[in-house]
Image 1: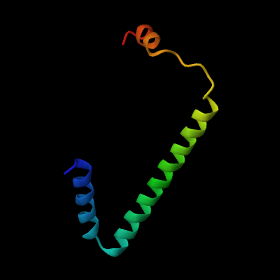
Image 2: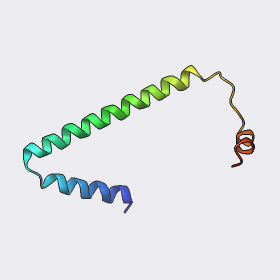
Image 3: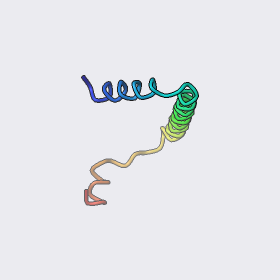
Image 4: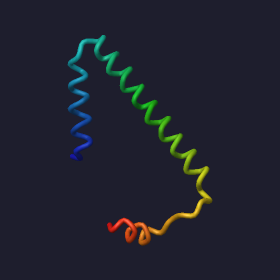
Length: 68
């Protein structure tokens, strides 16, 4: 079983044991976090699309300049 699946099952079991009012709080917080992540992703995509035609710096150049 994947680690992510185990973590989800553990979280699900913990939430199931909470009183109803706490489940509602957890659900509300999860929805807010999901919304925030979606909004951030959309902002990232917008910024990427605005810069799509800008020239990129080759990885080898960055690697050499920053001694990576």
